[in-house]
Image 1: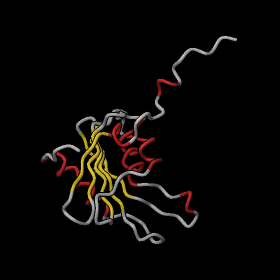
Image 2: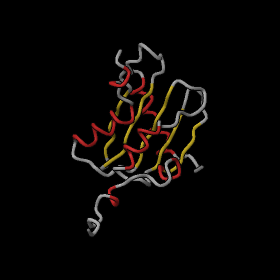
Image 3: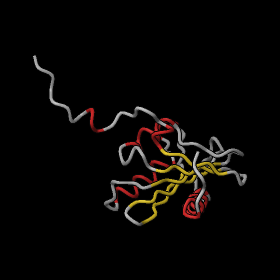
Image 4: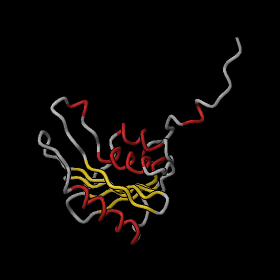
Length: 140
């Protein structure tokens, strides 16, 4: 666990702002995220769907906004949810985020003031990353 910085709290504030726009009529669990990449901040919120598998997590929404703007290296992400304890990214989001920097800083918050920070590789050790795909083909 890392010490919380002013930059962490600022990024978390952007995640809280995004959380207010979440569409969560089924779970009632609103999540907001903010990615810091290329000196800019990109926000996302969870968007649920009656076909649950079609729902989008806040983290992936923010990541897609960053990529759409041309940023594919993320310095960090903040995630906030409706839980009392800090909300951690789900496993699918951890894997998704690893594509853009497996060592990025992850700041997590909830309804209360307790904030947690970690690196993504601490939350997802041994992620499946690009290096596995860049290997030479096996000999026949």
